[in-house]
Amino acid sequence: MIVTFHIETGFLRAAAGRLPDGAVSIQRLHRVDGGCRASVWVDVSDRDTVDSALAGDDTAGPTSHLGPEAEGHWYAITTVDEPLDAMSRGLLTADGMLVRADLIDDEWVVQARFPDRSSLLTFREDLVADGFDVEVKRMREDEDEASTQFGVTDPQREVLLLALERGYYTVPRNASLSDLAAQLDISSQAASERLRRGTQTLVANTLAAPARPSIGSRQH
Image (cartoon, rainbow, N blue to C red; front, side):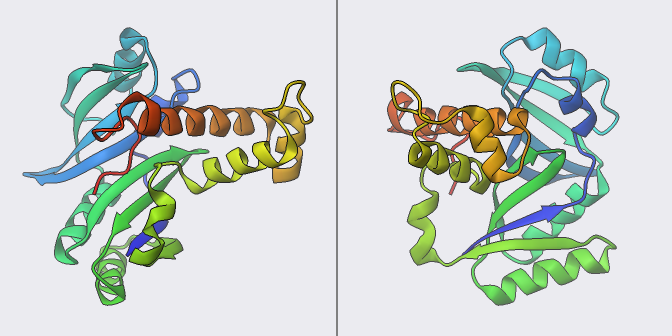
């Protein structure tokens, strides 16, 4: 089963605040001595900008640039961030695995796979025992997993489908970005970011490289 939850952590929030509308996501998470190591995708093309933002973030420990791809960069970042470390330990104990984690509107939205509800309960109890709360937002059983195949987050999926429904993609357009934002009760900037990131993920996971996991794709 795939579970979507929010976890309170400041990991890379400061760096993201210095980036120009850049998406930050964790694609892999591994336990290491003294903390954990995250494989991070940053959706910003200028490496100097990203390096500067990461260097000014106290939550980012030793950082290695793994290389550019598409319009962004891969990094391996070691951190001693306690909530992230607790999540990594909890997943290991519960036989769970990270699918992906996205920094959306200044909060981390995590998707993880668990064998069953009992494993999820074990995971949550472990984090609570460590002093961290997990706010479960959604659970998908395996038979529902096909709906996640394109890798978009729920907020991105919502705005993409609304844009299609309201005629945002028609020529001429029947709805503006402001119309979409108003219906979703979010800012035009937030609507623009979700629409752009969702579109990028769809293209990356379909047209760009259908034979392999792509930028932003859910890893299984």
